[in-house]
Length: 419
Ligand SMILES: Nc1ncnc2c1ncn2[C@@H]1O[C@H](COP(=O)(O)OP(=O)(O)O)[C@@H](O)[C@H]1O
Ligand SMILES: [Mg+2]
Figure 1 (cartoon, protein in one colour):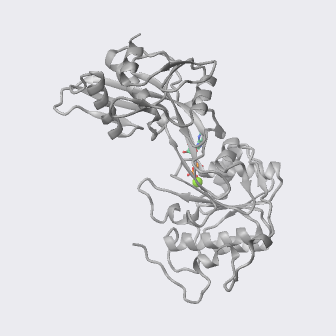
Figure 2 (cartoon, protein in one colour; figure 1 turned 90 degrees about the horizontal axis):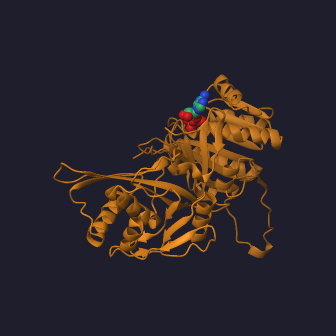
Figure 3 (spheres, helix red, strand yellow; figure 1 turned 90 degrees about the vertical axis):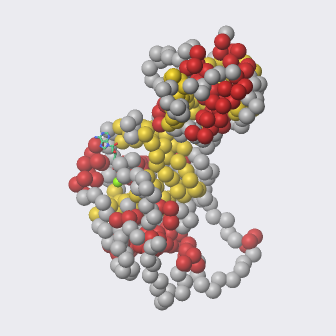
C-alpha cells in the first residue's frame, strides 16, 4: 500500500490530462483528422534502433528500466553523443544521481561528443521545468525518475505519487512541444513498487535492460512500443568504451573443446534467432531423491523431458542427478529447445560427444513425439550463417547448406546420436 495525495483543485488530472487533451472535447470525424508524419531519427546504434522499432520517434516518451549498474546511464550518454554529433540537436541531460564531474568522466571514457549536451544536476523537478521553459531542447534525459522530486506533492522522491506526477508532466510536455523524453527508471531485484511498472501505461515505449554481469552481456528488451513491435531484443556487450553491439553467436561457448553433454539449438527472441548451447551433466546420485538442477531453463520442463527419456527412450535416470545449464546467461522459455535438451542429456548419459556443427530444433511431447516449431526459416538461416551443417528436426531445413535428419520421435534421436 502506498500513500497518495489527491489534489481536488485539478479537475483535469488523471488520464484526461494526458497528451495535452482539453476537458470539454467533442467528437470529430476521423477522416477530417490531419495525418501527421512521424519523424524518426536513427540513433546510429543498430541494436537500439531495433529495440525502438526502427529508430527514435520525435515527441515520444521512452522509459528505460533496469537494475543499478546495468548500463542505463551509459547508453543514454552514447545516444546523447549521436544526437549531438550527427543531428546537432540540443539535448538536456538531467541527473539526480551523479555529479557533473562523474558524468564528464564517463563521457571522456566513452569518447562522447558533448558539443550540444547541456547538463543539469538537480533533484528538483521545478529546475527541470525552468530549464525547459528558458530554452528549447529537442531531447531530454531524466536520470533517474526516482531521484527527481516535485515540490507540488508533499511525498518524498521515488514514491508512486511522485514518479507518476512527474511522468504525467513530462508526457504533456513531450506531446505539446515535440520534445523526445527519455526516462531512466531504477528497478531493484525485489521489484521496487514505485519503480517503472507504474509508468508503463503512460509512456510510448518501454525498454528493459537485463543481462549477465559476469560476461558483460546486456539485452535491451522492448516490453511496450506504440511505434513498433514488442519482444524485440537489442544485444550489447559492456566494455570500457561503453555498450558495443554484438552478433548472435554470443551465446555459444567461445572455446570449441568438445565434451559430452552439449547440444546447440536456435531459439527466437522477438524476430531474431540466436544459437544457444545447452549443457547437461548426468552424474550418479547418492541421494534418495535425485537432484534436478536447472539454470536458464524451466525446472518442470526438464523433469518432463527426463521422464519422457526414461519412459519412451529406456534411460534409467532415477539414480542420477541431472544438471542443466544454458550457456551465456540466456533464459530459454520456448519449447523449441526441447530436443536439444534431450540431445544434451543423451550425450551426457552415454558420454558421447555431439559434433558442434549439429543443430537440434523441435518440441517434445509426452508420448515422445517431436513437433515442428515456428520461425523455422529464421532459425535455419542463423544456423547456416554460423556454419552449422546438420539439422535434427521434424521438418526439412530446406536450405542447401544444411543436411536434415528427420526426427519424429525421441527414439529417432537416440538412434541418430548412436551413429
Ligand atoms: N572503466 C570501465 N570499463 C568497463 N566497464 C565499465 C567501466 N566503468 C563502468 N563500467 C560498466 O558500467 C556499468 C555502470 O553503467 P551505468 O550506465 O552507470 O549503469 P546504470 O546507469 O544502469 O546504473 C558498470 O556496472 C560496469 O559494468
Ligand atoms: Mg545510472
